[in-house]
Image 1 (spheres, rainbow over the protein chains, first blue to last red):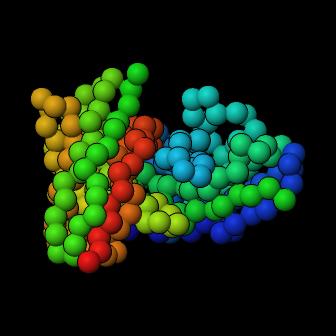
Image 2 (tube, rainbow over the protein chains, first blue to last red):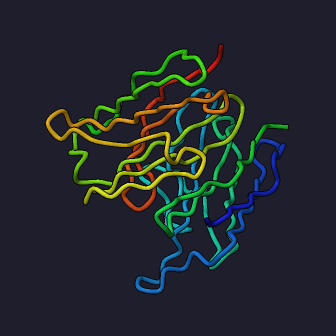
Length: 113
Length: 115
C-alpha cells in the first residue's frame, strides 16, 4: 500500500495569513502515460462530508476559490491557503489515487489564531 | 442534480451484521467507480472498499473477508454488507463516487458496534 504522511497535524493561522500543509507519499504518484500526479486534496468542515479541493496535485475543483493552490510532484506535495478566511476552518486531507487501493493522509486541522 | 445518499447505519453488537445502502441520483452507479470511506469519531478518513464499473472489487486489509461491496443497477444503488462487526468498525460511513479523485460524497451514515 502507498502510505501518505501529512504534516503538521494541526495549524493555527491568523485571518488573512497563509497556511501551508505538506503531504509525502511512500512512492511516486506521477503517472507516466499522462504526466499527471494522481494526488488530491479534500477539505472537511466540521459536521460535513469531505469536499474535493484539488486534483492532479494542482488543479482546483469546481468552484474552489483561487486562494487554494496545490503544488509538488513525485512524492512531495503542498497545499497552500492564502488569505485565510473564517470559512477555511476545517480539516484537510491528501489522498493518492494512483493505484486500486486509494489511501488518505492523517489530516491537518486548520484553526484561526 | 447529482447526489448520493447513504442509509442503513445503526447500533449493532460485536459479531453482528449490517447492510449499508447508497442511492445515487443524476448518474448511474455502474458507469463509475463507487467507494465506501469511513471516519471513526474524531479521527481521519479511511478508505474501505471500491466497486469498479467493470465489476471488480477491492478492499482495505482491515475489512477484507468481512465486508462485501455490491450494486443493484435497477435501483441505482451500491451496498456495503458488513459481517463479523468489531468495535473498531465504529465510524461514520461515506459513499463516494470516484472519477479519478473522489468527486461526489454523501452525508454519511453512522455505524456503532458495541455490546
